[in-house]
Image (cartoon, rainbow, N blue to C red):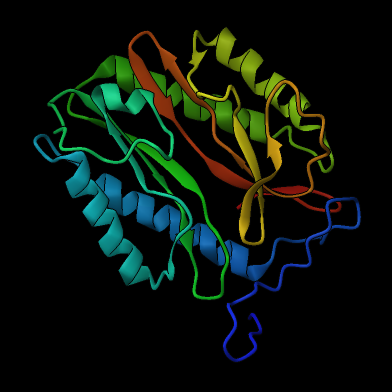
Length: 238
């Protein structure tokens, strides 16, 4: 639980310390926030069908957020279909573009719990019979979890980037992120405080980091995102 003085905002009980004395385990509130994020992303994917628009999918996400008891979101819900799935950035809001019979849907959600914890999750779904897209998504997810298995407490962000980028290239993917990264730090009430997981950031990774490779193989764009807790002795995918 979190404590709050009357008339003030919620402050998560997350004794974040960006160093080797960080907590052994992720806070329960953060676990709840990420569980919520996954459920909300899944609800958006479940709404996908040929003819549905990005904005209609966003509404399904909003309904799921309300059902989950979210307090709000910390940045926009990103919904991309077809060509729009090649851009995942907070300046690109959902549009009236409708899903085709062969399409890829990408959803990036960012819930805030009533206690003030932040979640962050991206999932994709192939709509209809699209074998190349199905293969691309399967391959990206496989390499993503292969790379996450190599995470270790305090490793430099650029080392994790290098591991992931090498695997992307080996599988024929091209990184699509507009800022050339595969993720970012996530601290209580703030994202990006310790910058991004990119080639130039040597910051040791402690606490929560969102790992989100976003890449294309040919004209097919796919993305997956999970939170990883870099604890004192081990790493855990939340």
